[in-house]
Length: 280
Image (cartoon, rainbow, N blue to C red):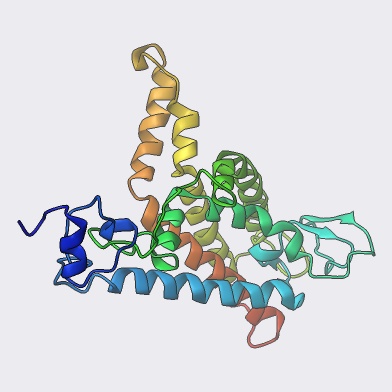
């Protein structure tokens, strides 16, 4: 039969003896897959999108400039916890690290939202497929001879996702405060709104939606409940989080794009490309 498991038939068919789908114990199918569609397109687009964000965020994180245009602050630089931060009127400008810190203050805070996203269940799927080809697509064999999953270093560190979730909630709360400060003018007077306010509002809404749609959040809200009828409030909250969780992939991409757009908008203002249009 074409799907026999005789290792000699695999060698005769020109398939080298190796692990994975071509291991002697597996069915003898010479082709790596039987898909006729452009299965490579999805992982290629995913890899391109994530790579573009990594390049952009790396540039902005190390730039250490043009991240504050009163009253707006880039989400990459908030909270700013180094003494070399640009003074921000009423903002999250906390000098936790003294003058000895000479690098960009963004490097001190980005580890938390970055760690949350890197360990996120959806992003694991995205970069496992896009970069590591593990596997590159459904019904397409991965090129690795062995598979250990997330049982060894460094992938075993993915299990700290829940703890990064707690930090992500704190960062989202601070960014919400920054967004509220967007209802001021450059002199710090309340009761004003510009285009930047709307940009920050859209960004924080997507960040909260993505954060709350997290699988860890869903488990925290509704996990370990044996009888939902005895916990009606948690059950209702679990239903809301579950509805968001069904859109976790879309929210992951939307919030990734929105945080880059918010940072770039502040960069344009701070570098003097144009002035923020004010509505009132």
